[in-house]
Image 1 (cartoon, helix red, strand yellow):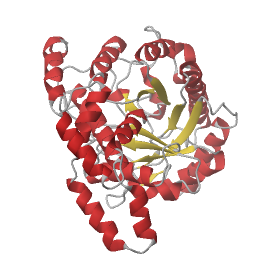
Image 2 (cartoon, rainbow, N blue to C red):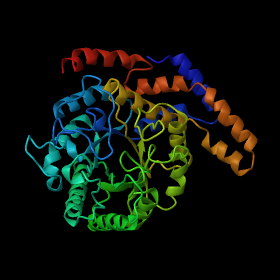
Image 3 (cartoon, rainbow, N blue to C red):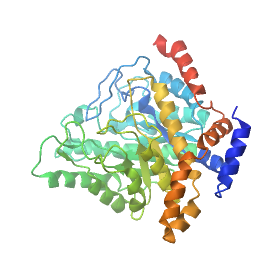
Image 4 (tube, one colour):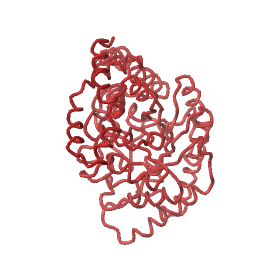
Length: 417
């Protein structure tokens, strides 16, 4: 149980700067965070169990106990969900279909292949997000999918995108919560191309075809994601930031900003307010890059805090959709889920504990001294006592209480795999 005396004292301190901690906790718990399914099985999925990754995707580490089936993945998440406070969604890639052991081509997937996921999500009170899978497939082996100059291959991947939109719309309709459908392709060149224009024209044509049919945005929101470079495409990613900014504006989609997809000196927190001047919304993929898009587990670092703060300071909660995107196989995968998800929720709470109105007044009045003074003093306000209360209200273990639960599950379940 949280120390009520400590929380009451923290509540009093925050009230002194005009912040209602009870309200901040309530709001922080209500913000949906989409948690990536692929952390649980190293991005392998169930299309071809035992298959390998390709298309610039790489998972490092061989910690024992990864999920080997849909049932194991669901059971693992059901367990770890009890350790993560707040409203949650579960993000699926197309390769996580439930085909009952039958071979299904990606351009032939239908809502029926995900109906068991919807039934499960209803039981678990989760929303679902979706991602068409443009990697780890024979028709992506040459490094090109939607930008391919082979019109047969391009047509296949366009059909996959169209099928994915229908599945995402199905999720939203069945679950009563909008599903974000995120498009990312690994297309690019290892060495410097001379005709990149052609491939970007192909990619633009593909999205024109994919988005030609309107869907009900009460149920599904498409999003498009850029990347600076990837393994094997170091010299040119066809889907650059500029390409997808224009694509999102043209087609009225969300723009996906992934924290690992830009230059090391760029930060996503600075891109949110500028992007939202021109696009309808942003989908965040929060991970932790270490010198490159290495997708380390999210920690409670300055950029994660800054992302949440920027959302709150701009009052963008209705226009920014928060998703996690990391996959670490070097430590217990359930601990990865818990660590990253709890840290994202901490960042949301921290943002909501800022006296934003007061800080805005200082800034607009040119009182930058007071602005900096309060931003620095806030760093040593009793945040941890408010976090403990959030965990108590959210019905999950406080502080380090969850770690022993993960160890017990590892001993009783994961070690037997």
